[in-house]
Image (cartoon, rainbow, N blue to C red):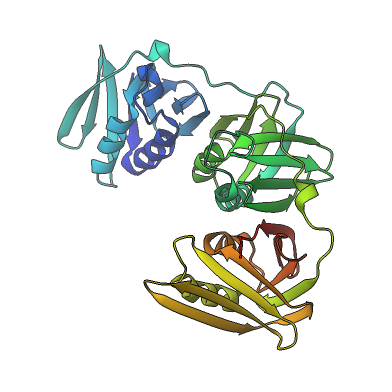
Length: 366
């Protein structure tokens, strides 16, 4: 194999693809490597950790065809050391890859590319949906943080995707809080549902292009494709809980508050939270304000009051401040709607005028 690639193109491609190589010491060296394929179809970089996989086509000149596998960490370090101008040549001979950049030349030991596993692809092509890459990136980046970090219950460590009636709905929960986000689709005929591991979704979000991509899925994996890119993730084989049952159907108090006021007051109050990160939220329907209170014996205490439009009863609940602040990144609405069904019941946060978003957080013991 002998190829030539622009340094900037090489740097960006290597750092995207390396994310999908096995990061721990792999029993199969090919899993921690990037596969470079050069043929009549162009230059492709591939990597997989058996959970996720990537196939990225990049621009470059193919002088002779070939295949080579290089440890991802080594290739990343080489790419990072390059200047961003000019081109780089890669020539494979024996068990070495010779990398030439300007006046410098280095040789890198390869790993057996024959051991590189094939990247699976969904077998049911009719389940395909066009969707803007930017929307999917934002969806995964914001909602994945609400999934469980524990794999004891793999379904809770995943994002639940349902597609119905021209709407893609994504849900994530760790049993303490729950986030639901909806995206309208141009294709209203496709229906289906699947569970994608949240950590896989985060990696995919980092690699998705801003342009339109095609989402495809079957029972075992889902894929995200563009003209030059294919990303694949295995799916979680589990049943997602019926999360709709835990969303209160009625409330005893509702407050409308400016998002920027809510965020500023929360940031100041959390400085004084205790080791359990607890803050107390009070709804005062007579004075039309919400107050945040926190006390830490080592720091002091804080009481923040902000104006709000409140209807319903007086109520006081305590929350983990991290779970409350997580709702802020899920909506671009200027105002938030907070509804509660009573003591010990979850608080629901919505964006005023934003029907695509719902966030539920369970209270702590008073």
